[in-house]
Length: 360
Image 1 (cartoon, rainbow, N blue to C red):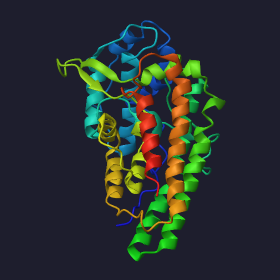
Image 2: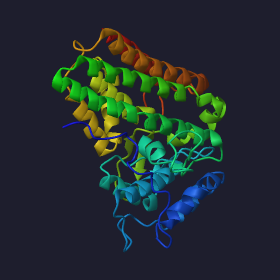
Image 3: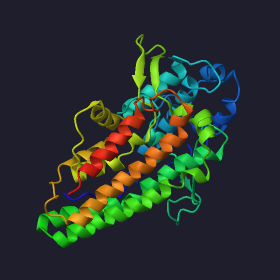
Image 4: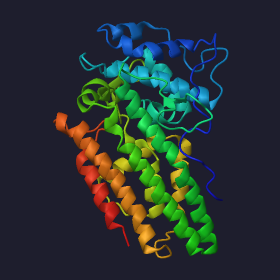
């Protein structure tokens, strides 16, 4: 079966709001108001007092995947905002009115109960003009933690990178056809297309500094996407839990390419972490990565130059990521852990080195 998926973005543009008159409209209002609410020291008390409808509580309970995703986005933002409110003492208890709906919707989506990359980026955008591309200048976010365009820009950079992966999906389908017929020319052409798509993604990633201030990123909105550490979900369990925070490592693009190119990352805590990141991806994305892992190794059949160009482009993408991690995070903080709870600088460097080491 050839790969049919077009990208890791939703097939249709994300649902931007619940229908008028829906009890879930409250979540849209909270989503709009959240950056202002978080400016108030009493925000947590206010959020804990709200009667938030659970996914299954209303007569018109959530039925469609776009509705579930929007609910997850809204409640995920509320939970991370509550736990990680900037300027307030750390919170380790998520109140039941947020905890119960979060757990319920995440059980339906078969994912851990925390806002991850899918809710923060993959489902968190809209187009100004739906007849035009999903690209910077034509997209905006549905929800944010702060009143700064820097956060919009950070999210939207990732959305365009995900949109550009459409060419990679098409090329993987071509690779499958090439392997079926042992067509070296088609294989090399498809690899060339992947390399070109990666170069376009790198060009987008390099635009981060255009609208994102390093000091503001670290101090204003990065804290909201941190991991949950020793958090108790009120009335759901007496035991505290730990969940990975939102991180680009939860994007499925690079894991899919690692699976395609059969890059042999050595056994280590890093590899365990990367495997764990799949638990924070949508089900269908995990299935795609598993599917691509079954595509035969074509290293010997592929042309040396074009094969190495793909690996070098992957390494260059990680190089840029490493540079931004240095400028936007590492220089400001002593804690070696990223939002996903890992020693990111050390591990990013390992990924870069092992990618280049896989060249022919």
